[in-house]
Length: 290
Figure (cartoon, rainbow, N blue to C red):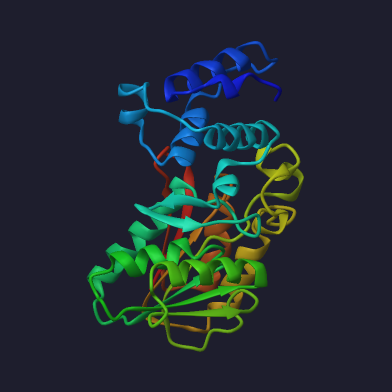
């Protein structure tokens, strides 16, 4: 983006120059929110100061960083990868292109786990399968009533586990979490009580139509022909590893309600099986409770 941004001496001038420049570009809409977030990230300020005090000075170095980030964002790189971190459940987690970007709808997995743990205070350990950045498992640990609760975080990707380890260190949870490289539920011993999973669940043919496909790791998105392939393998692998009372909570595609229930019932015939919705009212979670 060839601009005159370096003329900016204040936050207000910088924002105005970006807006003027982008309004002359072929973009359909000026990315107001993203521009604000980039300026906040570089300057370490928040929205009230950004707009209430437009006279706040900016350095040439900061202007250059804002321009570089904005160029990369307009080129298709998501902000979380540019910033190297993203918010989830009131916490901030390191993220890289080795992991999926944490999303708000996944926070309900944490809600479900915390509610169940509150009703089962004797449970001392849970599992997060396909942990990625570790955001689900660490959010549960940080918010659970039991300060001695432990987590086992499983992922097949060494790159993902490296990110999860960085977040483990960030929140000083080394004594409460174990990172395990392995395939789905294979590394788990019998006796599991709480299993959480946000596995790839997008049908293969649909991935090419999604904007996220160009930026986020395909292996973390592609759930096979019907999108349910890895969840299916997980459920088969753990059916003999749970101990009553237990809860399996999986994030699923919004087309998976019927597939999920029909497949789960024969595997867990005595369990209560339900489909739950996300904040937008879309089918999003498979709940198997024994």
